[in-house]
Length: 581
Image (cartoon, rainbow, N blue to C red; front, side):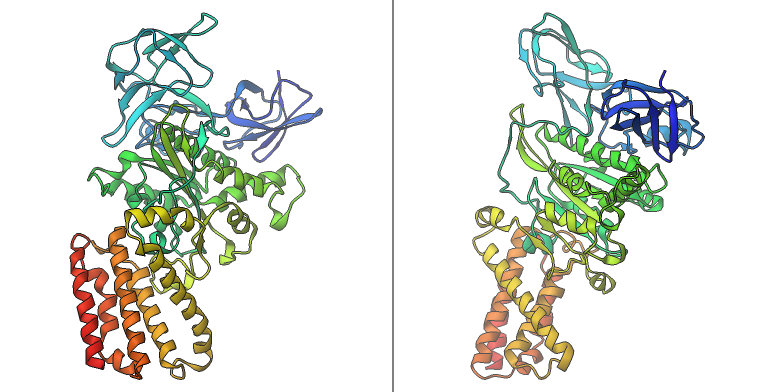
């Protein structure tokens, strides 16, 4: 029997054995703690333990399973809360209390609950990997499609009738090519660190609509895209992800709380439980799954929590859903990698992080994409990862390496956050590389002016940024009128367009047609003001009309369902021009 030779925090070694393979799941000690083999030499095997190793002793047994760390997939994932290694926290709390005992093992899904199953195959059908053979109404918003597990295929020889079944009940029997019979139930298992295969990675052409103007207009993300949300403490990373989870047009939300404070994760779970899905009016949790791995949980489980959430996302993607993954925060995951690396005595790279940090980050974001699945459905996984750089220093390794592998960068600014500018995305250092890919969609579905207007808005904000350097030195009074106009219109853009009120019914979510009309009004105002200045009129005369304040308030004054009211703003601007002339 293999026995523990040494214990160093979550890292355990076994000497003189060839019984284990890389990434194999093992049970460590008398309490059977869950672990994973991460290093094998001729002398020792190193194991990363995903549970607390307190009270573990040298000499206790280590038992291999022959399979990698996997998660159970099936009906019951939605509305559930899992820890980093896939244990159902809600069920554990109800049955055993608030604390999880070391080595506690429990099925991820409720094995006693009966689900109404509708069979889609019949006797004689040929099934292969990923084919859909039955459906289950998992929640009011999610139709769960049961798919053939990998490595199984053949001719259907028996099909049960439609009805109620438990997750482990056999509903289909298949005869394989070697004449053996395989039973299909409502569940399957999948290794968390192995991406689910796809037929083809498709070109990204459709935006993930969030209803947040600064994102949808200036820095859009695509369905199947990746985005990083770096920001210091208090800049609103978590609240921004809450907003995106509620309002983005994804079908499924996977929220991963990786190494976050326990009280913050509690707040997330309580608030999500009260939210209603704006599209259906049903509870938002009907299409949400939570991975809760708080900072007081074993550090090694942070790595597993990221991969567990991604596996859930890919599973629902294979059903044909658009899935949005909110990872909060990848910095805590990187810190876990650093701690494990230190205990393994590996050569550290920048700021003590392991040299393989970039490859781990790239592997994480590469699992996003818009895919043609093997079963013929189309689905996507979009990843939005929060980054928590210490001291809001964007030059630190996690932020810099994340920036290399994402195409959307929403940099949160603490000065904007402290000024109550929501969302606090700094438009001067943020960017989105998806704009060219999405331009055709915007032109077709919103209007041909949308991308053109965006370019003009960005140009004005860039000009303002340059002028503010001069204003800081000598003030704005010495600027010529055309430059003072740029500053004033840019203020209208910042306060009246980019800043949103999460507590206002018409400003919490803004549809794209309204965003387009708002830009039309702002740019029309700028155009008319330029004409006035060219005729020699003073900028102060325009300011006295209070037109800029009226334009700022249009986001509140025009309801989302009465966009025709924007037509009144153009004559109003014309009247102002006539009064100045």
